[in-house]
Image (cartoon, rainbow over all chains, first blue to last red; front, side, top):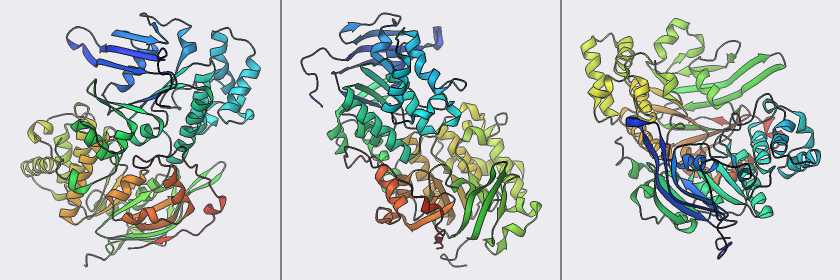
Length: 267
Length: 288
């Protein structure tokens, strides 16, 4: 898939993205000069530790932060300051915590049909049932509330909701970090299948390098708001990054190494 | 006492929660022991791993009930001690580090004073001596500027620093056994490794026993000497940490296969098929 969409208009193009929080003296730059390109059908990973700005990049794309500069292009067209309704038919987001991202007092049916109502799309009944089938949930779950579902089932609902408008791009913000290992495997497989079936483009944020290596062909490492390295998945698997911080991150992801880390105990 | 003698021996531990829908058995008849070594307890949510740690210190709140044939800690039966005698054990001879330092530290007391207080409670040292000891301990957990950190409040420190402070506080009375329940799960990986290196060094230098409770198979197998794998309140398997990849139980194998790996690409991940029979098996005995 790495040469998917070559020569065509990229699905997503970010150039010189800057994001700020706060005002005046306490104005803080969370994302600094970030640029990358996702060809149609690609899967791109953003890794980094807390505060590195990786989730903020997703939030800037989807319109959840106000104070940003730079250029964001979706399928060739440049986004303005506010997101138009049509944008959400192209780009959707899945959030980290399925316990927090679903309305606790809405049934699965209402959660899934709301995007259709907002966008005045008909045939709701069939589409909701189809969505449940697509993410591997029994149809009987349609009238359940989120608290009656397990964490993995909730994340399936969140994925189904994101797909209701048949977007081309999914922004995945740590979609499995709140889940047990065995449930994580199910959700990652689901995401892999959906991408293959629908030719989706993924931009995935995670602190877990093994998860990102499993899902993505290209990976950008972020630290303190900046991209410090962009590498292909093979380079990451062979642990041959150039940047010192990337090396430490890779090392730490492989488990505890007494000799290496006892020399790095300071703050 | 020999280095190989167990510090803690647990026989037939059960933790039950009576609810309106019936009794929930969080831990079902587990037996294990811990010497001056690092023992990892791994499992997914609901496996009973955290309840095991709490039950040892008798920290399971009613209506939860703990029963065991015995919980022997260096010759004392913890189940027969009074609540007052138990306080002599807790924090002093068996300490516990929890997942998130934000919820374990008192938000309105300076961190240095909290550590000093922990020390004075167990030793009756003077304020001055406790302060001195606290600064030494902060240095031992690799905090560069102990004087400054002594004066901070918990919200002013980062997660990694907070967990260093918790470790300092738990180790200052020089316990024989430390129970660490997901001590680094809330931290970034690189910070996590630094905190583990500190824990590793202190445990080795002081010859402590460590029970390391975690959901992270990779981490446990690389950090501990021995691993106990729990499922549905039972111990399904136990092995040397270095030999975890040779584990035999289908649950352990399933967990390992479900984990994406940096060094081995797979097109799809294996999904764990849970066999209801696992819930009926006898708990494996995991003595030293």
